[in-house]
Length: 278
Image (cartoon, rainbow, N blue to C red; front, side):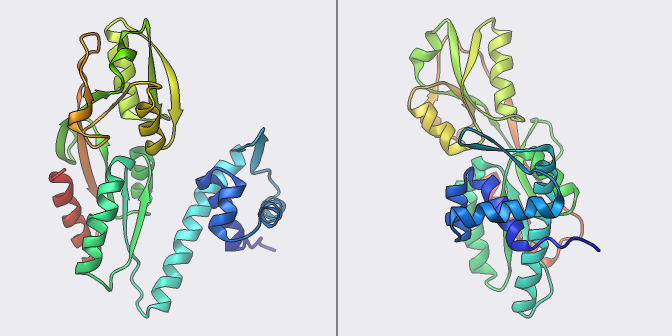
């Protein structure tokens, strides 16, 4: 007999990964921590694999958990699309857009709210992640539109902007320069490290995080310098220091899937206009 995986178990599993803890996940899925633990135990029994390994207070995915996470997201996306389409009396899926964190503050409150006003009957699914992950989702046809970063000569470039240093000037005077960076893969992380090494400067990673808000907090607290575009804090906050090397330019790209419906096509047009104006 085939194994049936209840969507509430998958939703709880994804919530734990996305929020980083049982406590935060329990608030998101509206169950107690003890009930959440039982749900994960039940899910592990159904797939006959351990999905999490606990290291202190931190939960890390096992290899089986990494595989399950990808499938769980896809199952939940299709599930939610089906419920939304049928309950609304329409059978077209939502316009699905993915964007890097740098664009999220501007686009979520600007682009998507504008699209909703222009097309109140249209559905929207938004995903915030790194460019590499978004490209994989687009290739699997799980996204319609991708907004991310790439090399300045990329064929999908909408606009090109310079990278810049951000942080406390005194940190650049240190013999070993502390860096605050996002987790790999990250184009800006690679550019910062390559630039320092080419300039013969020593460096160390002082803060590493998957979250842009945490990166901003770390730079603001003087824990390390970082490399981003003006979308990070603003052009007026860039760090200029004689020891720090010049950085390359980076392209803001937009890629779209094939055969977009009218709603997704309109969203793609608005996305391009918005990115061009950044």
